[in-house]
View 1 (tube, rainbow, N blue to C red):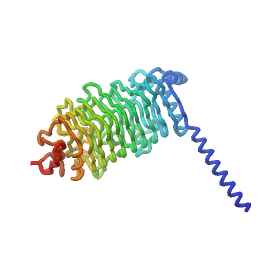
View 2: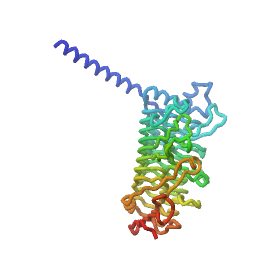
View 3: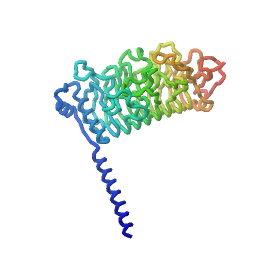
View 4: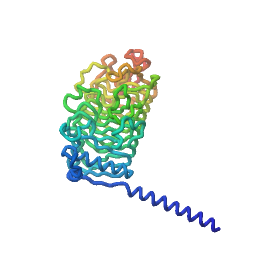
Length: 429
């Protein structure tokens, strides 16, 4: 009997100890609210490395490093303009909240104590950025959020680079942010990432002339770290060809750049087996006044493109390539659903898929990729609408044209789909 009581008491003590430890860990997480003035004040505590160009980033990275050590936290930005000379890093279990009226401005001061970086934000622990090829797979930052409450602007000021780098990370949410000032790169680089949600964001026009010079550049790039294709430039990232999985881009607006969401180079294993990005959802978005495609796929499988509006895609595009000037285009397509979309004033036929190979970085390194669309998937595409759209010059009269088998643009390979006539033609004459 006495032994039983002792066991019960020990069990209760163990539970109390675990609860105490849990509460200590929970309490250790930091909640910090910042303003531009507060960041400058904190940065001045380090006079030997302080200058006005690096003040905001220096203080913010000090906070996020403290949050990393504490196991996470919440960082709230008060209204104001914040100037980023180099990357602010976000570690795991951190939520960043931007209050109404926050503006994050990119700057490029070559005389500053710390040189300008190519990215405004990196979803990576700061302490890992000093290590070469330190993070691979999905082992970087996890469970992090960037949430806008009201009007919040990330202004790249037409400086070449990236707004957000999401590489080798998982369980990420980016919501409500307006992006502007892109110049020849991307707003968001989603690379070797898993479970990423981008919702209710606005991606505004790129620098004038940049879509023509860099027409393959997407506002959101779905990519993987591959030395051969140059898929990522972060020194801390392993070039391990980790694909993206479960990426959701929803209820957002894209206007005035070259492409909305997409991939412009694909990867394969050493044995030339395709590596696919998978479970990509593009839903409820508007793609307007784009130089090229709203969505461009390369080696995507289990993809859903649902209930989007595509307006004036291919605007001003005079490129001779058959893959340009559509609303949805690409290759390496496998297990795809495209329904409920509306296409208006697309330069060519709204949807086009054919066999392709990498150009530029990675050209010739990998074998050609092809289009795998089933009869059932083709018939589902009849659940889309179009108005005042152009045609494929060789295969007119169809909203969708894709090419089976070896993917070459021949009548034998061609399949045409006409939305208005509710017809799928597997034998184009």
